[in-house]
Image (cartoon, rainbow, N blue to C red):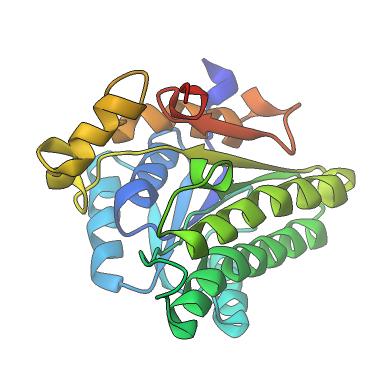
Length: 255
């Protein structure tokens, strides 16, 4: 359907080297967007770029540290110079540190908050400024998590950051609607990536999912493409400040 078509659009995806970020980037490219792939690991970005080449898409690779405001500024300048002002930005870069609150170090706490919260702010702010200067409507999609809407043990820093991203998304939506900039969040549940596939196929994660996720399984990466395109395309034109959960019903499971 044409309403989901992204021909002529420019997209920026952070954390585009692997996992969900790679899925987001290839999905946007397949829908017609030119995609700026940004992350710290250049070799992983090259792998994503090769996949986009295979489907006939266009992409560029950009070194980016989302916690560094100068790196973010330089990233946006490169996107504008090589592809144009972005129409779509997916704020995906993130990390986690598993530890109980009595054990987590200050360094690990700061790294999670800086990457998952400060990084989201810096990249969204720079992208919004770029759109506003160009008088361009656009869509910013922050990647939150169902752990931003619920809690679990040993992940407090991640939970704190992702719950803040949920509220930050709503604040951005409120302030930037006047410029025609929509800001929404995707809140994924458990998805299979190369990092966790063994755990979810045979390990403790497999039993946890069968017990707690109503659909009885983890998500496959292509299953998040539809929700992404809804928020990125004209199909979601009247959506802003929305938090879209994609979790197999995990959040609505009974106690």
